[in-house]
Length: 127
Image 1: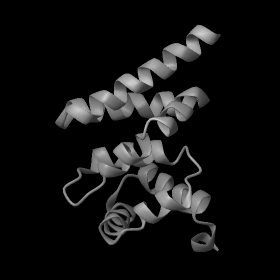
Image 2: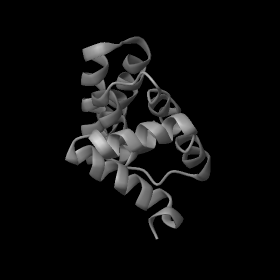
Image 3: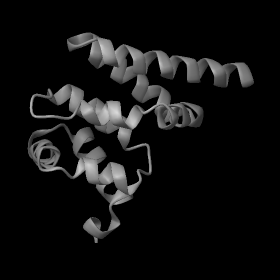
């Protein structure tokens, strides 16, 4: 079990490094795999938290972010109870604009993930 945890953590680190270097479809594939790992393994969540993964993932959310990259990034972030620093980061006007756009035009899964992200991490907005 310990080896498996190490393998998951190692793969999460590899994917974070990959995200720094690639664009396009390779970025989407890395995000999809990272999303699956983070959803299934607490050790991957810890690895992301300890290695500036939130910063990297949230940096992918910008004016020129494609819907698929945004969907995968939010699918990763929704797995975490983010602290106020990251909530503040996600509440920047440009990122709120993305959120509103995806809540209007995104897939059902993305809309659900955004709603969960708001509900879990920003309770005063969901009341």
